[in-house]
Length: 573
Image 1 (cartoon, rainbow, N blue to C red):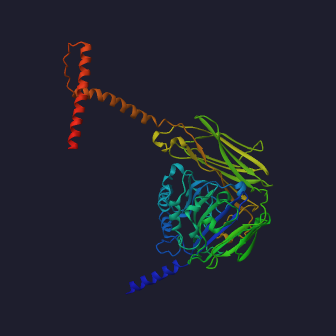
Image 2: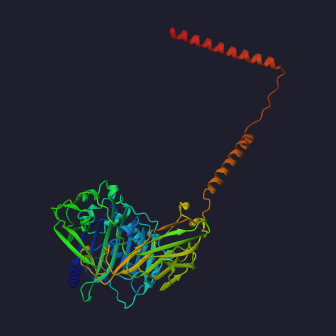
């Protein structure tokens, strides 16, 4: 009896603990400079529990499938993104959540982890099954442990950061499709049945210039003293629609997502839509219906205005109609953006060039991270850094050469960019030969090199919409002025062509061998199976033989005519 009572008490405690979580959903809409509109759906779940001892057997709003994975593999922080397209920083500014093209995964493991590489491999395989992505291709030969570019975004128990518990990898060739979106939506409390997640129509999402699906998990402080911790999961979908694809610059919820709003998620603490109307002074547009509230945000000496809608049963549609003629706008690029490209020609040597653009009036300290596959060996002695035509010496340089089929090449630089400057980083590499089994099915397409990551702390918030370090929702970014704003810029991916064997040669050999066998088999088969009979030679002359042949033909025609006449007579009778 005492055992039953004890089990009942434990069950009640677990039920109460599982209900100590909150869920919020938000939609952020912002017209961009270059005739696009940015839509960001943000779903946040916060669970007041101790992530160190939590077993994730009883959950309420927190996704249990994800919790069991991080508990099994001893994960402290997890960041996963699947992206198609390239974010254009120079014209779109900075996104709320940044992501590289393809698949990107990095995780911090707990300090008591015995074998980080084993847990990392198993974690990637588990997430591959959870999200239906090719993350199982992530392994030690394509993973690194950056020392300066990444820091824990949540609570840590150690006085210093040990990057040996960090693993980062990217699959730039990963294709994002509906197979990834469907299991991602199942991690939400209401899935896609109710709330803002019901707007995620696959036909509309994958008809955009840019779309990204992300999951971010971290432990955070529950109060100001940080005596207790909570577990936080942020799920986001970022979309960039092109007015050319929409057919008009007047947009609406129904036009963007293919349907209207059908109320909020019953389990959500709040469901809100924010529309950035800061550009209304230069390109005015009219919102229908009128917003519930106007929010003015001052962040880093820059003021933005937002229209706020609280989703309930009364609001099912939001639209914007531009007033007057379209004005010519002047682009104001962000303080920092970058790109990269390949140089060289031929199948022996090549080069990589990374260009950093500092549009700020002050110097910027940046961290440049480049990870190259083991089959793209770079030479450190060819590294050249120039800023406005002058040599620039890095403040910190860390280089780990790769090992054939065991470890990628890792290069991390700390630079101080002069104000109003363009800095170029170039390094040479060599094309290597691979085993014929190491080529992909479409070997002539080439091999992908992942994005370069540039990290910096800005002292201005121009074109900056990201969440603060301690923020959970989009509303937390309003009036969130800080001494610095962390940005991470990811460049485009590159495709290199390695020396490729002629994979059509086996096909040609098979065709040739089969043809030779067929031509040789026919005569041999006839010779070995057929009987040869000698025909007696006739002594008749040529003219006699021709005459006899003509007579036989004539007799044959006569016989055929007589048979036809007899058949006709019989039919008449």
